Image (cartoon, rainbow, N blue to C red; front, top):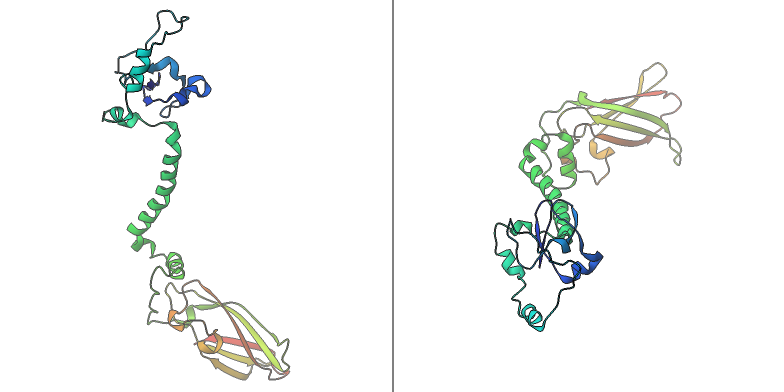
Length: 252
């Protein structure tokens, strides 16, 4: 059995269990029209100009015979799904609403696949962005950029600095710094020159630190510091006494 939407004329194969639900009321999977499948019921695949059979006396019940039941059992009066699917012009109309979840699932899968395909096709342009390249490096999707040979210590900038007594060690100071690489390229970690000053801004002590002396051991010196990346630094050193009232930081 088949039914046809009265609005868009989409044709659907039917089962008796579907017709029994809600007294044959259906929703078209193509246009969303609600209609009674019983009023548009066909035994075989309907032709474009074919109209549903209308009983001569709508109030009279149809008389069933054994011959009619045998025909149904033999499949002579009911078209099979294979015969309906053999029509290439009507194949796209066989879209029952019960399969809508499948299309929704495919759509959910296609969205990330489309994004991934776009990213792969335009990966060269996307990786030109320092922020995107930095994220890709963190995910191990690309090899770390080689540190450029040119270095410009003046491109390192202090964002914050503070010096205070060590909380657990007497006669010791803690220097806390936050620096950033303002260059538009990755460059090696800078050396630090720390100068303690007296009240007359005269140097009373000076110390130079290699990156390995102030960076944690887990840091890979070969990677350097990416553009616009913050680097916190904590340095401990002996307190020279009350004469130290200030300090200067210089990048090497």
